[in-house]
Image (cartoon, rainbow, N blue to C red; front, side, top):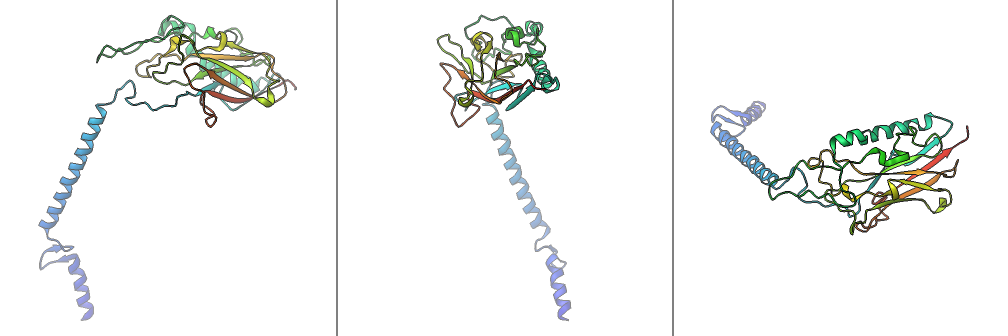
Length: 282
């Protein structure tokens, strides 16, 4: 009898036929609870959508409303890598680097630049202001012709100097919307040198364009959507008589009167480092 009473109590807790309650609540009670939560979550969803809508109205499709960035942009090299080792007698050791440079510089071909971009006045900023609420988009971009890289353009020497043990490295400054990298008509420029332990091994370095400058006419940058055809300016460096068969640690920096020096804690802010070794032994 005790077992039957216990079993009946357990069943009644789930479904009580006498009071018609399920889990202690009647159908109307469950209906009110479900209605409350339905209205509650619809209200929350509505508040979320309204908040997102209001916030999206403050955004610009072409540039960030708020821009919290480092004062010193980063630098990158092509071919990319912390270590580059080539052998002048082994084509396979440098062939991949020339292919990377070919692919990277293809968008800088003179004919393509003439088709997409404009010839701009050098040594001055290319400002393209909006007219009040009327956006001046898409914005125009200045030509950066591959031929400006001269001996490192790959147009005359398709091996970019790698076969002769005088390799070219391409350097670019990371894009920052609205950045003005120089003042008083002084353009920023790149300088490269060996680190202290290898200071006597780097030899002579050639820069293309002349003096390794990023011409002011390529700035300011207005963003990927606003400036669809923007061609990032480049600087090529060529090692003319670097010490052979040894590891050489090289560091390149951006020098500018309007860009603060990079922090020593950030190895990419305003500088880039890499190791280069050119082997001539078979």
